[in-house]
Image (cartoon, rainbow, N blue to C red; front, top):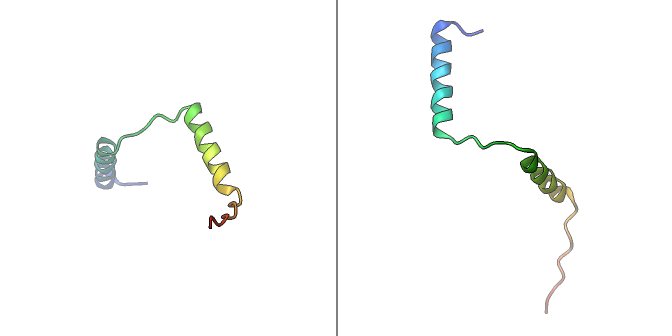
Length: 52
């Protein structure tokens, strides 16, 4: 547990981070898109077919 001084410093840091970096809403549609991307990235890669 943070003491009073550390707590104020941590809260200030978090406030700065949240003010600097946008936080995107994580909706069901976003979760589904991420799940599709994760599933695709886990699939074995197709072998390249030479084009000569």
